[in-house]
Image (cartoon, rainbow, N blue to C red; front, top):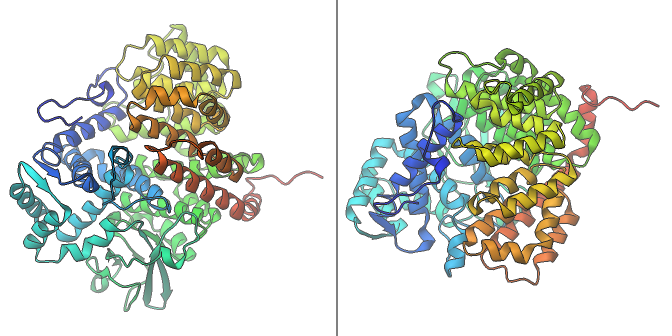
Length: 596
């Protein structure tokens, strides 16, 4: 918390032990510390005039946090990480009808609590990054500096920031940015090709895919970041300022929009172009690969593309070396599995697809780190081992269990490297039984390392054994610190065998849970959002809606709308795409034909 003169942190967001901590926490700590320090300027020195402009605090602190981390650790490649983790999260919320503008009406304190969300933080920082890229970072920072000086020790509005930036840049920033700040949503740019020209059309993106006329009234200023092979036609500063525009005399042997994925929008390429880009990956940056995968996955959800298109696209990334690209691929495929959860033949086939995709990379990396290994390679090894193991790679599961047993028995505590605890614990619990669960539960209780409890708690939630879900819930709501309950809830909600049990527990104990957590409505709101977002059935969406219909839901009413929209979109996605997906999986031999 960014108190002026007394910044406070949770332990895992401040302390790091080089000999015992997972290296991924180092990245987290650097960012969180930078974020809270940034608040000394954005929030403390200059405070937003009212809560409706919370983004002036949180959007800027988020952007500065990433900017500072990148400056201190350029080898961590944090901007691609921001695209994968930050922008994709903002896109997910802003793709719903139940989203809200960055600058949002706030009636009372319960409204305030609910806007500490991905829109204020992550969409806010994304549009800041987009504008800074357009103006040039030096010009942008000079304008921001003038804004801070003009309003030091006082309050400011969004229009005050635009005025300072306009003065410094000579551009009408309010005209460019107000649609992004005051309106909900973001555009998808649909590209069509004809000989040496492309036509780009913008429309609002909704994950439900059912955009109506009244949904699509905004015309955004969209910096295209258009790049082609030819020096003469390389255009990176042109912007789309109308609903549709054609660009002529282009070399279409290679082109891409949204250079470095700096713009807050999705791009829909013709299917053949998308496949061509997957084979031209040497001309794509890490950020652009992440963006393309994220866009392909999102367009499958909305029905503007398909799951088949996504799978065909990522098939060509088997030789990829970058952790951040792999993280986006595996995260997107995990979302596909969530959408089709319950269809056992499809899930089995998707697991085969994932194993074929990652197996060679797992074999190449192995289990042991090399001397002076960089942080991204360490994270890639953990990600691939956990992915392979959770999807049934027999040798990976066997080795994970072997190391787990040696570690828990005390025979060899060095057999699990600190960076592999999450992966090995997770695989051992998912593929193991009560014995492994109880061993890790004891590890959670006795953990003395800074991140040990968090890692163990998250892994325990991966158990597939129903009676252990009940034990885990009892542990979660009786022994786990209040601020960490959401960690366990996330583990259960992403576990297809435990998701419904978690919802039933919340229903049966809602008054008690609300009484415990409602002293800080942000905590209760977060618990509900994390616990209930992963379902894919309209019947469950209806039951959730009916459960809350006659309750006082102030403080989490926005989240209930988000949950409803998310499940509805996922259910429609599953219904729409199942037949074509099955045909493709059979054609590619991921789904064996049933024997007569």
